[in-house]
Length: 417
Image 1 (cartoon, rainbow, N blue to C red):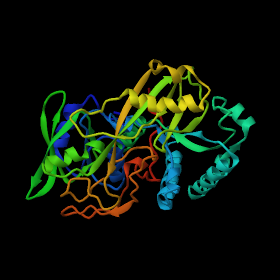
Image 2 (cartoon, rainbow, N blue to C red):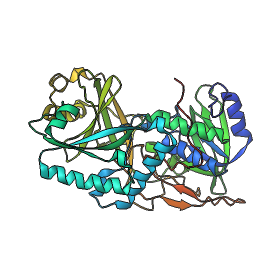
Image 3 (spheres, helix red, strand yellow):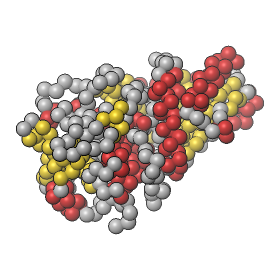
Image 4 (spheres, rainbow, N blue to C red):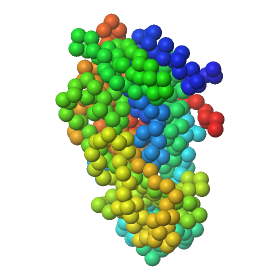
C-alpha cells in the first residue's frame, strides 16, 4: 500500500483493526469536518478512527460552490475577527495544497462609480486582513476592461467592476487529501459503515456500534472520546444517544444548476445579485458553468437530499436574464444539464453550542467548505479530557473553514485520476 492510500479493497482487515484497537478519538462523519479533525488529531499524536455512513465527501462536502474564500460579506456585519481568520487560513491552504486551491478572479460588477468605491473599500480592507500578496491585489475595471475581460456582463447595466482573488477547489479531493494525510499518520478510516448506536459505559460514550453496508457485519469501535462530525446529520447522531434531544440545527437547502460552458461562456467567476437581498456565483469550470446557490429552509426528513423545485431553478436563472447578455440559457430551463443540492446546517445560536455527543469531551459544530454562509463561530482551544491521558490543545473550528491545516505537514500532491 502506498503512503497515504485508503485501503478500500481491504475492508475486512480494516474492520478487524477497528474492533481490535482502542482509539483516542472515534469520529463520526467522512466529510471535510471529520477528515480535517482526523488529520489534526493525528498530527498531535492521537490514535484516530473515522467511520462514514456512505462514501467519503458524499454529502455537502462534494456539493459546495467549490470555493475557498474568506467571507468578504461578513465585513458588512462587522465580524472582523472571522474575516481575518478565514482569509489567513485560505492563504495557508494555498501554501500547503496549491493543487487544490486555484487562484481565480472574482468579479463584482458595479452600476456606478460610487458603487465601485464602496466595493473597493470593502475589498481593500479584506485584502489587508488576509495579508494578500501584491500580485494578487484587486483590479478595478472600467467599461473597456469589462468588454475585454468579461464581455457577457450587460454593459447597459454595469459599466465598472472590481475583480479580487478567490480560490477554486475540488471539494471532494480536498476531503480525500485530508483523509490520506490522516491515514499516513496512522488513522484508520472506513466508508460505507453506518453508526447505529453510541456505546455507553456508566453514562459516558466509550465508542460506537457500526454496520458494514456491503456485508451487514456489525462491529464495535472503542474510543476515549466520540466526535460527532456528521454535518447536516448531527442531530440524527445525537438522537442515537438521547432520543429526546432537541434539534440544534436549522437546515438550509443550497441548489446549484449546471449548463454547458458554450451556452454560458463566463471567463472569470462573477457575483450577481439575486432575490431576497442575496448574491449568487456564476463559475466556469472546465466545459461547464454552474450557478448557485439558493438558501431556503428545508425540514429534516428521511430523504438524504431535499427536492429541487422549478422555483429553485428559476431563482438562479433570473439574474442571468437580467445581468448577462445571454438569451438561450435564461429563457429555456431545459438547457440546464444538471442540478445538485446540498443540505447546509446552521446553528440556532452563535456561541456555546454543543453539537456533538453530549457526554463526549469534544463537540464539533457542522458547516461547509465554503465561507459564504459561515456558522460565524470563532475557533477555540479545547483539551481532550479523556481518562488516563493528557492531550495537547486541539483547535476546534467550523468545518466551512476546512479545518486548520498544520504548517508542518503539507497535504499530499494531486490524486491520480
